[in-house]
Image (cartoon, rainbow, N blue to C red; front, top):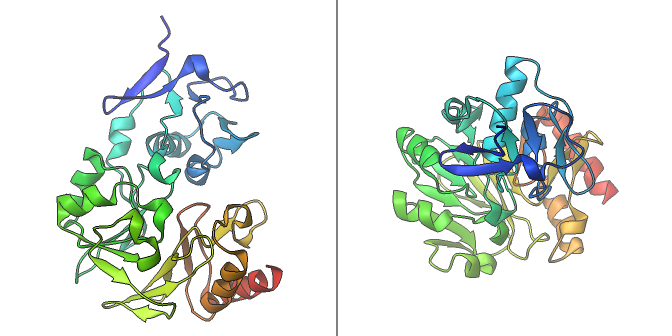
Length: 297
């Protein structure tokens, strides 16, 4: 009898009876619970593509690296909408998280439905480790963060992506950092940011207020190389350029344009967004891309 679902860490991941018709035949599939958050397409773009308001498996993995990427996508799906029939090594793939982007910066995985599948990141730092936005609070990632020395600070870019930040803060004794205008999403946050001026925060960190998507949205610049952008800025895979989500700007597009001009004054190489693709470019190329984006919007 063919199984209708796959279980990973005791949770049902997907139901083959609900698979979307766009899937190509094979072990991996996406079912109709998909919320089209794009997380899986960031992780396994050669396997998973976008249809009308859903992801689907466009190409069954052929190589070990493609299969591993597909399993990572399965594990990161916030709604458990990706399945794999038959035997799989998803439990082994769990051990990869958090995945190194460039040391000491990691992608957490285990995206949460509470943040519509937003990405979260981890920084290992000698003065205290940072979590940027929040993944699901589940044992595999909690244990791995424990192994890496725990979490001292949780930087929350804005209200949409707090997810399970309160549980991580309680478990690790971490201090949550959030703008005053977003505080109602984390009323017990320990550190409250004020004002609209960029502010150095501890060694290697600068908080850059970027109102627009939400009133108190902030970006975080680390080591003048890594920019964590929340829902402010991302790499558009289709257009191969930096971009912003005008259709998902909840507060003020005029404010977001002004925030983008302010952000363009900084130097960085990495864009690490909450939603959308991350990218690394030479600092000079990134500056050109930022200038073009400011002109375009």
